[in-house]
Length: 317
Image (cartoon, rainbow, N blue to C red):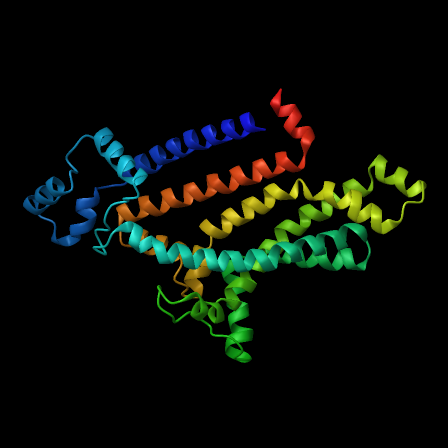
């Protein structure tokens, strides 16, 4: 297990290095450069030259990449040209806010998806299964901004239960954020549940039709023991990876939801940075999200190995 963990960590480090290179090359491939984006219509040959010298933009690309990477390893992601603040400072509270939103949606959505998936799997082709499956298909089909708009119309405009948009500051205490995340959490939960419960339902059906479960039923083992002692643990193992992917999506793919609700998260910051051509900030956010993606995948992979000794033995050889 220790050697497997070490290999996963090494692979994670290599993957992060490759992703950082892709991020840098992708930004470099954009038309113009940071000096042109920063000066905009006020750019002159003299001002462009001076700014490029100030920020070492005239240095060879490989030197700038290794300087950026070295500074990033030390926690220095550069300074935003458009906002005149350190990138790490701009990302800090925004990332925290997205983590709060994503954590709340995960704590609500994952248990709900598992319960509904088990219910659908145990009542295959009956009305609970048909109802849950129909709702999940609708949740998967509707774009997130449509779901968000419908929720705003019903609960914010018609019923006036919750605020339609977030009006608190970016660095507001978490206690002030919580009342504003109800509708965003519901929106994310609907999308999350729709994807996870379909997999749980399929896994549950497969496990319940397996030979060892049918043998246990023939021997008269109580249904509750079969479901919770045998079927459920085996059905949950493949779900770990889909939950990890969902968390990754929540952290990096909530830009639309955050924009609709004016939520001060990292997704909305990325949209604003792209609109402002703030390339240093875009690089920093992309690198942070890449680290999160790799970390979540690594945890999910190791958790799967811990819970399934057969995989650990097979991969060890």
